[in-house]
Length: 311
Image (cartoon, rainbow, N blue to C red; front, top):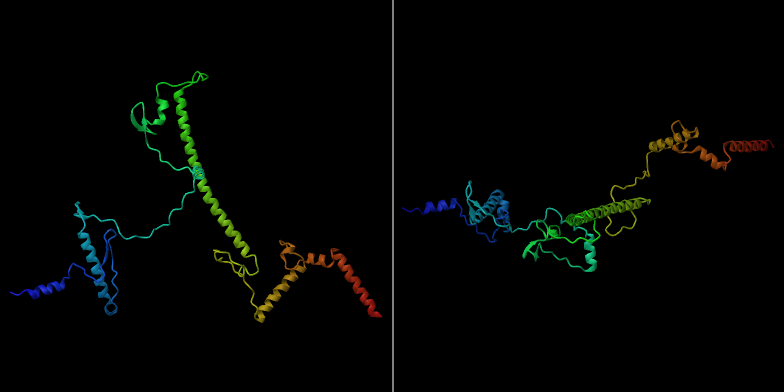
């Protein structure tokens, strides 16, 4: 019985698990991703887009599954689990690099003096015990003065002097001093960053104020290197051509303000709220003499004109 036709139809129905392309697929099992670098076939892409995308996706998934089956596995209650390797694709950082911390007071001093940082060992040799002991912490070398069985006491020491308590107080004071210096360094670093930001904001505010102080709102001023464009600063100008009705309304509004100012300031408003300051105008015309002197002089000039007319 010839079954070659049946096998051929079965092979045509189910594609091979081996994906062969001109450009090999880039499989990253760590991220479960497949990158296809093969150029797009324009004829297949334009003639039947759906079948072309399904074929490309099938090849990528088949290559990924074949790579997963080649990984080592470990048993679990849910079945065998593949142990994913380390990813090979380099992804960009989600956040910017952290800013370097400002140097502490000791670091600045060490840099000025050329002192190299030396890491101290955690263990030191104890001659009495003939063994390595901790430098700090439990049974540390720094507590040997407190735990020794004999102490040297000065001749002028107090009667109730306790050498063990004195050694313990000296050690705790050193610890407190180191902690205080650490907090001061942290506060100094935080203050330095805050002062820098405040100074930057003040400079930007001053620059914005100086730019809008000119008639063109800084449009024709010389720009500095790296200066940002100032937004939200615009100057409004009245239209050069308006209709007769608009010009009439504007003139009537000015005349109304002048008329209200000539009668004196209204209640609740000062003389400076009106467009025309009547008192200042009278004081300027009369050269500081006042309104009575100005009226008397105006009346005198009018009387001279009448006499001249009779001649």
